[in-house]
Image (cartoon, rainbow, N blue to C red; front, top):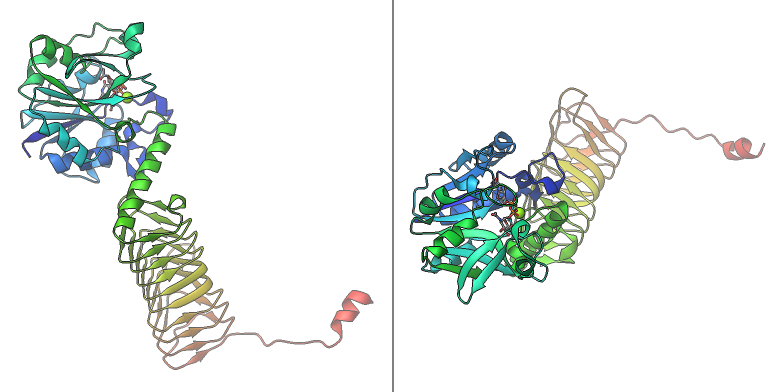
Length: 429
Ligand code: UD1
Ligand code: MG
């Protein structure tokens, strides 16, 4: 860990056309900058993030994920540009890897390759059919000569297909030597970090190109790029699970946040959404179900079920159109059409169709406790707070508004009436 990392995240991200800073746009449940910091921390104990636009919001958001990252504010008014961004940063180590905050797909394993080359500067290069928008890299054999920004490039330089991906490793004091020598004498009046390359080259230092994949090193500049990055990240997440033994039916139709855990030989059917904080262990999630920050253990859920935050299902069956919120279900069957909120339900209990825990009175939320082997008939409303003990039978259509003792039957119904011959009188006479 003898390396420092600087992550550039001060830019405005104009092309995102958003009030949210670019690096806070999310893929797979996390802001783009989160991924850059997470990978950087695998390589370094000295990570610095450069901020400027909406710096406070970006820093506060990142502090909710990481606690040992340095933040510096760029002197953007006097030193705009990627070179300005890294000026006056004191790093712990001499080797400094510079990353962009808008490259969420780059993994630490790929960044390690930068450290394998013994040279003064390593810079990432992508071969692209359409190089527009990128800095062009002028390469002579094995050595990089210079980088020309598109706005400063001649027609001949614009035709170059090797572009600067924007990640660099500076060693041997290259930053300390050359950052003070940068000028802003260019088309954008900015201090370009890329100019360090030519200055170092002219002094005889070695600059090695490291060819990297377009897919993982392409920066996100627009919402279109964001959706492409999302697709790549999703494929990656699902592939990892499949390699670990999880079965996916039509994986391209499922969505899984980056921190979701799936264990054992679980099955994830088409159209399933698994959101942040969810844990699926040895379970079967059927088509079009949504799981949000919930734990599902040895259970089957769906099709078309929704399990909301704070829920834990163990050895439980949840069928279609069942919604569970902040509830613990152990050995429960709820086959269809139910809302179970703020409830604790124990082994052997069967929840009939149309059962609703009335957990909210318009002001507060209340808890429902249901014991073992309770049979709840269809269309039962359970008005919380309430406790139903073990071995209880609740008749269909009952409104449970009092605690029920073990062994009892609960029924609340108005008697049904029939009126003979009413039909023909009503419709035909
Ligand atoms: C930069 C490179 C270009 C490369 C491209 C790859 C320069 C001069 N050019 O161009 O050669 O092909 O990246 O994507 O470096 N940033 C700051 N402060 C600033 C300006 C930018 O922190 O004053 C940050 C941005 O937030 C972003 C990164 O630096 O994370 C790159 O900035 P961007 O404006 O996207 O640079 P490009 O013009 O794309
Ligand atoms: Mg860019």
